[in-house]
Length: 287
Ligand code: ATP
Ligand code: MG
Image (cartoon, protein in one colour):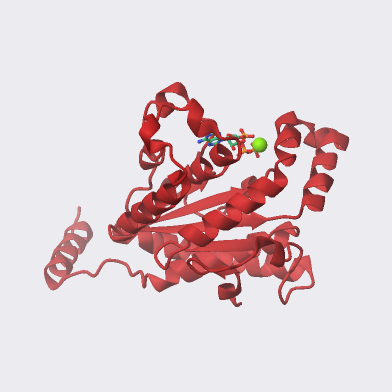
C-alpha cells in the first residue's frame, strides 16, 4: 500500500480541502480492509516485541482530529494486539492549573514513552497551536507579555520542530496522524450520538460549540501540518470518513515506520552464549 500519498512534506502548499475525506484507496470492501488490519496488528506485535527487547528506540504516536473523527476507535483497534506492558496512552484535556503554571511542552515531556515502548498521545501539545489559537487563549495564560507577539505561532512551530528533532536524535521517533473527516460526516456522527441511546454518553454539547469554528480549525490544522511535518517527524493526513480505512492506514504507517528501524533481538555474544550453556547444564543436572 502506498502510504506516501498521505504523508505531508515540510512547508508544502497542500490544501486540506483537496484531500477527499471519503477515499478508501484500492479497497472497496470493509472485510478486505479488516483482514489486512488484522495482519498488520500481528506484524506490529512482532515488531513491538523486538522494540521492547532492544530497549533503544521509543515510538511516539500522536493523534489529532476534529471531534468525532475516531481517535479513540483508531487507538483501540490499532493497538489491540500490542503488549500492554510496552504501551501507554495519554489523553490531553484542558490544562490544569498546575499544567498552566509550566511551559506548554511540560506535560508532554512528563508522558513521553520510555525506550522500548510505544507512547500514544490522544491530542497533544499540538492543541497549543490549535484550540489555543482558534480561541485566542494565549492571552488568558501566564506567558510574559513580551512573548505574545504576532509571531507566536511561527515561534511555536519552530519550537515543536526543534523538540521533535531533539526527540528523534535521542531515539524517540514521532509519528503524527490527522484523522480527516468532512463537516457532513461530523454532523452525521453527532446526530447518531443524539439519536442512538447507546451512544448518548459520547455526546457533548461542547462539540456542537467547537463545530461552529470548523473553518478556523481547518485553517489552523493546515498551517500547523505544513509547518511541522518534517523528515524526522512526519504528519499523515488520513481520510477518515470510513473508519475501517482510517484504521488500516494508521496501522500501515506504524508497521512501515517500525520496519524502517530494522529492529532485531539483542545479539548474544560468545561469552553470553557460554553462560547460557552453563545455565542449561546446571538446570539439566538438577536432582
Ligand atoms: P472524546 O470527546 O472522544 O472523549 P476528546 O479528546 O475530545 O475525546 P474531551 O475531554 O472531549 O476529549 O476534550 C478535551 C478538550 O480539551 C478538547 O476540546 C481540547 O481541545 C481541549 N484541550 C486540550 N489541550 C488543550 C490546551 N492546551 N488548551 C486548551 N484546551 C485544550
Ligand atoms: Mg470531545
